[in-house]
Image 1: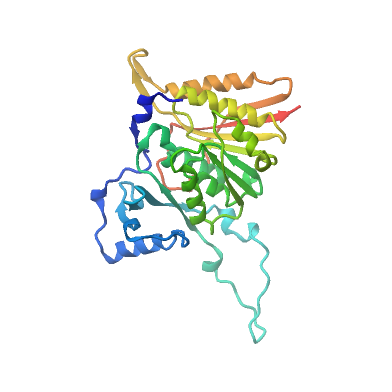
Image 2 (image 1 turned 90 degrees about the vertical axis):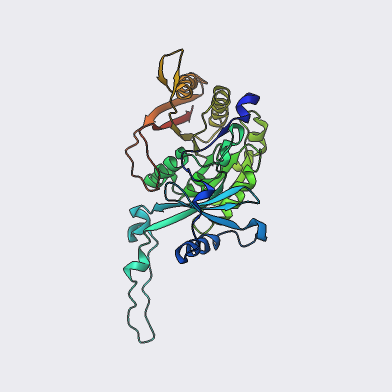
Length: 339
């Protein structure tokens, strides 16, 4: 586990840089935005006066709502639908509809082609290092882009996400998949947060959604979820690498999961985070360097029972979400074929 000092360190995701001083004035436009977003909050929740969300404008232009009671924010993540989701070719065959006079009713183009969508995510704006999963990180949006760009991988698949955080990437995968098992360690409010976000976005999702605990340090949590995991063929994870002990356990968990049938393919999205060190006298990405070391370790494991194909994935896929897609974002594919 991370050291106590590291766990006390407060960190903030680069995705949202905003302050409560940037509150939108109560203009007609501002109130309209509040209503539009608030109407998508889970209707089953009893929202008391002190739990009302205050509208805040983020530095990157996102509209966010602040809850003083939960100390969380509710953010819109706008995206553009891929062409295959807005074209007749990929949709169900439409039946001809006639009116009372027997005339054919024409489906208007504006009704047929939905171009833009919104994922609503409740999350923290800053946390200690041990609770970073309660924030939204750039790697999650990067992986979400990859999912939307590759329906041939994710459509009708049974998917597991490790260290899911607030569940954004799993919700996007749920737009295509048959089943998504969303997992994280049961710490802080993370599993409840995932549940609330899945409920908020249920109109977007077609997949069966299961929220479960998988703890990299306790593989008994894998055994406890064996029924939910037995048909998983695609695994994904985003921005899970931020200290070496966790990276060790992450790869041990990958090995444990991919040693069981069926054959699985995993996609790992990461952002290289650079620091200047006196030891190296240059700017380096030590956590990513250690990740590469563990990639080499994995290639050598269980060779009598597994054929590994591990490779970096080109990142020239289209961008559908609004965020800064930096050159430091990387994607790795890990495929295990059981002998």
